[in-house]
Image 1: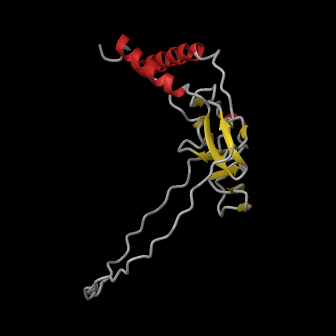
Image 2 (image 1 turned 60 degrees about the vertical axis):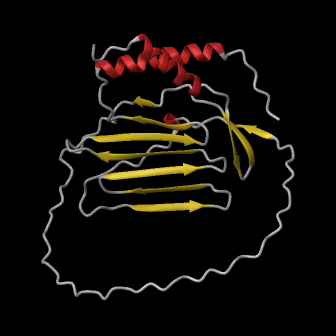
Image 3 (image 1 turned 180 degrees about the vertical axis):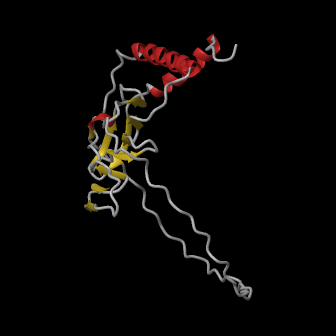
Length: 226
């Protein structure tokens, strides 16, 4: 029957959950080798709406058709044959790997992302933008003013989190927060998520049970970082 999760579907979900519950991912950063564990929260979650209505729909754009422009024909380009000289052989020294300490870092959570500035529908828009970064790969940027705003930060370990707010067609302010890290994937928490259908809810429930079963099997495993 359509919309019903079968036993075969649960076995497939168990296999996917086993993949998701693998050992912490290792990746390289400017700070060295970093191990990032998996998230415990779902990849997508709904958060309450801010409860702010600006009292009017978002302004619509008026499209004005431009007059046709005559384009003069362009003479075709004649490509010449490229001359490639053989490169001289380069001696490559063998690479000697040394033991590198591994740093275990917590993955960022979308709920801990910075709050976005409140949007507005004032005309003309009054706002601004900012951007800062350094040689370690860290940055922060954002903009405010107008019907949509955003802020995002990234640290030297590659962990990124941010949020944005916008005004929907009913004039309500909606917020989305997100977080991502190498080896941990992408997570989002949003106030504008739709309610799951019955089929989607069944698939999510089956995946959650399979994921929890795999986690219980690997709960006693020990990961040694060298």
